[in-house]
Length: 261
Image (tube, rainbow, N blue to C red; front, side, top):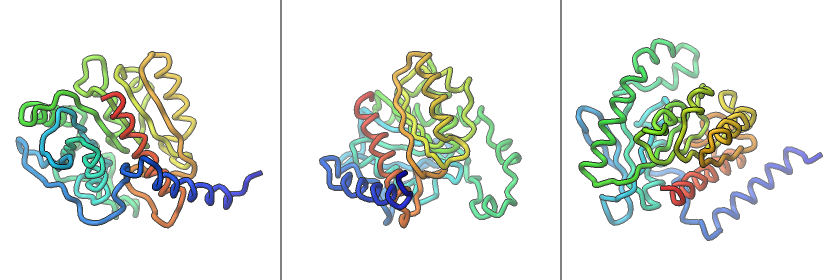
């Protein structure tokens, strides 16, 4: 039997190899100051990150953040990382200044049920549609990919239906994603799961694959060993498995968008 220490050592080697590979430009920014900017779009604060040397693009990515929201530096750095690969990236504040309080959530004092009631699917759809209209009308965007994480990973499939406004999707560690939500997907979708994610693990990923197979939808999925919930946007940089999962999921997303968008 392979020991956990051996597996972690192999993951560290894999992470280093990935960084030195021909895909070394596909790097998630590990830290620093985000380079995007917030603009008011019809009353909604939207984080804008632009491709190198331009502020327009015919292909763009709409970023649906986790429940911690758009002000979190890891979310902004990830949006910047997508943009550095040639995409206009917009990340709307779907929570309108009312993201989950991380400290209260960790302490078990956050009223999640009340928070969800303040942010119903109907309002999420309104914000999504006004942002998409802005992308098309103000930037001339023709094709739009959607990247969703945690909360955003659950809602992104809603916009990948037959008549949905998103052309290609990527989701990582979605929260409480249901079978009907997956069954409604009709556009290409890539999924990233972690073996230690209680909300969407390898069993859930296998179920998602079966559903997408049955629907004959273009799809692809990866399961990352020892990756906990949230690995796609934030990782413990001292844990090789988490560093690898975050970086590899980013490569998974960008190459998926490059192929299908």
